[in-house]
Length: 117
Image (cartoon, rainbow, N blue to C red; front, side, top):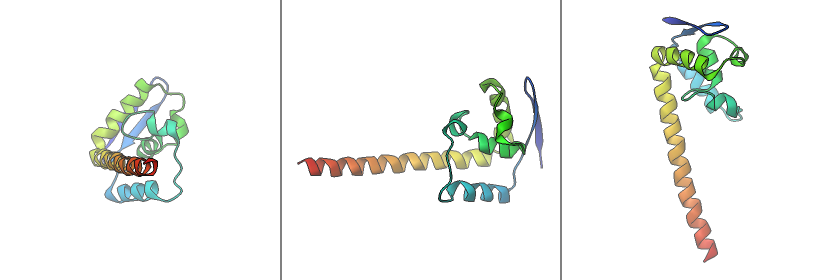
Protein backbone atom coordinates (compact mmCIF):
# COMPACT_ATOMS: atom_id res chain seq x y z
CA UNK A 1 0.00 0.00 0.00
CA UNK A 2 1.48 3.31 -1.09
CA UNK A 3 1.61 6.37 1.16
CA UNK A 4 2.66 10.00 0.86
CA UNK A 5 3.71 12.23 3.71
CA UNK A 6 2.43 15.80 3.65
CA UNK A 7 3.81 18.36 6.07
CA UNK A 8 1.64 21.40 6.70
CA UNK A 9 2.66 24.48 8.68
CA UNK A 10 1.99 22.75 12.00
CA UNK A 11 1.35 19.03 11.41
CA UNK A 12 2.38 16.05 9.34
CA UNK A 13 -0.15 13.74 7.69
CA UNK A 14 0.35 10.41 5.99
CA UNK A 15 -2.06 9.93 3.12
CA UNK A 16 -2.56 6.33 2.10
CA UNK A 17 -3.88 4.38 -0.81
CA UNK A 18 -7.14 2.55 -0.04
CA UNK A 19 -8.13 -0.94 -1.07
CA UNK A 20 -11.19 -1.98 -3.05
CA UNK A 21 -12.71 -3.34 0.19
CA UNK A 22 -12.28 0.08 1.82
CA UNK A 23 -13.82 1.66 -1.27
CA UNK A 24 -16.88 -0.59 -0.85
CA UNK A 25 -17.06 0.25 2.86
CA UNK A 26 -16.93 3.98 1.98
CA UNK A 27 -19.74 3.56 -0.54
CA UNK A 28 -21.90 1.68 1.96
CA UNK A 29 -21.26 4.34 4.61
CA UNK A 30 -22.23 7.32 2.43
CA UNK A 31 -25.32 5.66 0.97
CA UNK A 32 -26.66 4.44 4.30
CA UNK A 33 -30.06 5.95 5.19
CA UNK A 34 -29.71 8.59 7.87
CA UNK A 35 -26.16 9.46 6.84
CA UNK A 36 -25.47 12.88 8.33
CA UNK A 37 -24.10 15.70 6.22
CA UNK A 38 -21.77 18.38 7.56
CA UNK A 39 -21.83 21.09 4.90
CA UNK A 40 -18.45 22.55 5.91
CA UNK A 41 -16.88 19.09 5.76
CA UNK A 42 -18.42 18.46 2.34
CA UNK A 43 -17.31 21.74 0.74
CA UNK A 44 -14.05 22.73 2.49
CA UNK A 45 -12.03 21.33 -0.42
CA UNK A 46 -13.29 20.37 -3.87
CA UNK A 47 -14.02 16.76 -4.70
CA UNK A 48 -13.92 15.17 -1.25
CA UNK A 49 -15.33 15.68 2.23
CA UNK A 50 -13.04 16.29 5.17
CA UNK A 51 -14.42 13.07 6.67
CA UNK A 52 -13.27 11.09 3.64
CA UNK A 53 -9.93 12.90 3.52
CA UNK A 54 -9.39 12.09 7.20
CA UNK A 55 -10.14 8.42 6.47
CA UNK A 56 -7.40 8.47 3.83
CA UNK A 57 -5.02 9.90 6.45
CA UNK A 58 -6.14 7.60 9.28
CA UNK A 59 -6.79 10.61 11.50
CA UNK A 60 -9.79 12.25 13.15
CA UNK A 61 -11.50 14.92 11.04
CA UNK A 62 -10.84 17.39 13.88
CA UNK A 63 -7.11 17.21 13.02
CA UNK A 64 -7.93 19.44 10.03
CA UNK A 65 -9.69 22.16 12.07
CA UNK A 66 -6.71 24.50 12.35
CA UNK A 67 -5.56 24.09 8.75
CA UNK A 68 -5.91 26.61 5.95
CA UNK A 69 -7.20 25.81 2.49
CA UNK A 70 -3.60 25.91 1.21
CA UNK A 71 -2.62 23.20 3.69
CA UNK A 72 -5.69 21.08 2.92
CA UNK A 73 -4.98 21.42 -0.78
CA UNK A 74 -1.55 19.80 -0.31
CA UNK A 75 -3.18 16.84 1.43
CA UNK A 76 -5.84 16.69 -1.29
CA UNK A 77 -3.20 16.56 -4.02
CA UNK A 78 -1.57 13.53 -2.41
CA UNK A 79 -4.97 11.87 -1.89
CA UNK A 80 -5.87 12.33 -5.58
CA UNK A 81 -2.55 10.86 -6.70
CA UNK A 82 -2.96 7.77 -4.53
CA UNK A 83 -6.73 7.24 -4.92
CA UNK A 84 -7.94 8.28 -8.38
CA UNK A 85 -10.61 5.55 -8.26
CA UNK A 86 -12.25 7.14 -5.22
CA UNK A 87 -12.31 10.56 -6.85
CA UNK A 88 -13.81 9.10 -10.05
CA UNK A 89 -16.56 7.47 -7.97
CA UNK A 90 -17.25 10.72 -6.09
CA UNK A 91 -17.40 12.65 -9.38
CA UNK A 92 -19.84 10.13 -10.88
CA UNK A 93 -21.98 10.27 -7.75
CA UNK A 94 -22.06 14.08 -7.87
CA UNK A 95 -22.92 14.08 -11.57
CA UNK A 96 -25.69 11.52 -11.00
CA UNK A 97 -27.18 13.49 -8.12
CA UNK A 98 -27.12 16.68 -10.19
CA UNK A 99 -28.89 14.94 -13.07
CA UNK A 100 -31.53 13.48 -10.75
CA UNK A 101 -32.10 16.91 -9.20
CA UNK A 102 -32.47 18.41 -12.68
CA UNK A 103 -34.99 15.76 -13.74
CA UNK A 104 -36.99 16.14 -10.52
CA UNK A 105 -36.90 19.91 -10.85
CA UNK A 106 -38.23 19.72 -14.40
CA UNK A 107 -40.95 17.27 -13.36
CA UNK A 108 -41.98 19.37 -10.36
CA UNK A 109 -41.99 22.52 -12.47
CA UNK A 110 -44.35 20.81 -14.93
CA UNK A 111 -46.66 19.74 -12.13
CA UNK A 112 -46.82 23.25 -10.73
CA UNK A 113 -47.59 24.70 -14.17
CA UNK A 114 -50.39 22.15 -14.63
CA UNK A 115 -51.86 23.05 -11.23
CA UNK A 116 -51.81 26.77 -11.97
CA UNK A 117 -53.64 26.39 -15.27
